[in-house]
Length: 319
Image 1 (cartoon, rainbow, N blue to C red):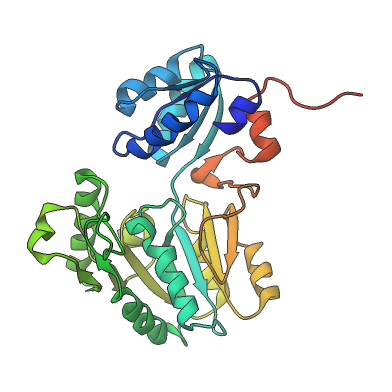
Image 2: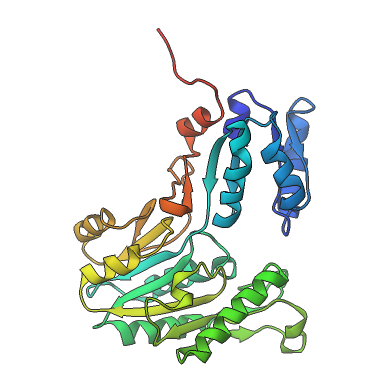
C-alpha cells in the first residue's frame, strides 16, 4: 500500500477473508491522515470481491499475498486487462543442517520459531528439515525437547505460546495430513502442552508434531502444510541435500545451518530460493530487503525502488 500511494495512486485493500480484523484496525488509524478516497477497504470472499477486483479495468496493478493456487487464478483473471502483478505466494522452505552446525539452545530456539511461528501458518516458515546423518538423532532429540516447551491454547491468554489454526478448512487439511502420514508408517510424535485440556476441542488446536521415518516423495514433504507439523529427513552428502531441497515447485526461502559462513554462501548460490538465511530462518526486520520468490512462490518485487516501479506507468529521472 505504501509504495502505491507514494507513486500517486489510490488503493483498494482487500483483507484476507478469514482474518481481516488486524488490517481493518490498522487502516482505521491510518486512513484519516489521507484525503477521502485515497485508501479504500472492501471485505468479503476472494471468490466475490477478489475476482471482481481482478476483472475490473479500473484496477491497474494487483499486489497479492496468499496461496499459489489463488495466485494462478488472479493471473488468469488479470490477463483480460493486462494488469501488472506482484505476488508473494506459497512456500515449502527447506532447512539444511550440515555436520558442523552448532545446535545449542539459541539455535534450537530459532528452529522452534522458524517452524512454529503463528502455528506454522507463515509462507516462509521452515516446512522441511534435512539433517546430515551424523547429527540426525541429536537434532530430533533436541527439537523434540524444544517443542515440549510450547503451550498451545487461546492466543489471547498470556500463558499460551502458540495459538490455533486459523479456520476449519485448514485445520481439517493439516490434521488429515498428519493422519495420512501416520497411516503410511511414518513415526509421528506430538510435543508441547495443552493450555486448557477441558476446552481443547472448542478450538482448532494442534500440538507441535515431528515426523521421522519419511522420504522425499511423501505428501507431507511435497506440499505446503501451513501448520505445526515438520518432517525431518536424513542425508549423507550435501549434493543429495541440495537436490532434495530444490525438488519442489516452490522457491520462497531456505536456510543453511553451518559454522562455516563461506560454505553457507556457496550453498546459498545452489538453492532455488528467493532468499537464504544463515543459522536462522525468520522474517526480514529490514523492510528495505527484497522479498522475491522463485518458481511458483511468486513474481516481481515489492521493496523500495521496485515497489515504486510496480505502481507506476513509467519510472526514472531524466536530466
